[in-house]
Image (cartoon, rainbow, N blue to C red):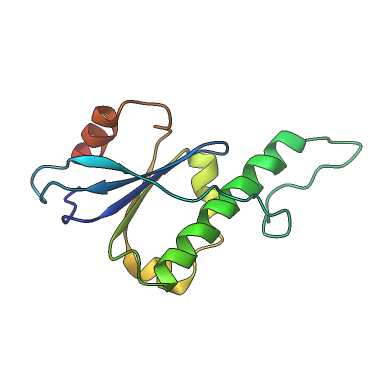
Length: 133
């Protein structure tokens, strides 16, 4: 995947969220860490599975809420014009939940998605995965 300079890369799963900026060019991705505000899980934003006494799945509901909170953060940045280009790399389950919450402004700057869990991996692994996509 070719990424223009300045592209924001969000790497997430249901528990962790990291932001990077491509400081390289389209031919050579070079990611640097971007500081961001903490993600707030919002129980009202999740459309994921609901747990019940007969089928408790509180952990999955919390992960879905965190994924929705990530998108809420990205939506705000897209609406404020802070993101020109975006790529989302997320665990498949988290990515499915995140897609349900994309704002039109976020969809407009989204260059691509990679359904792969790379949270906790070295930046070099993320760069390689993006180059191969």
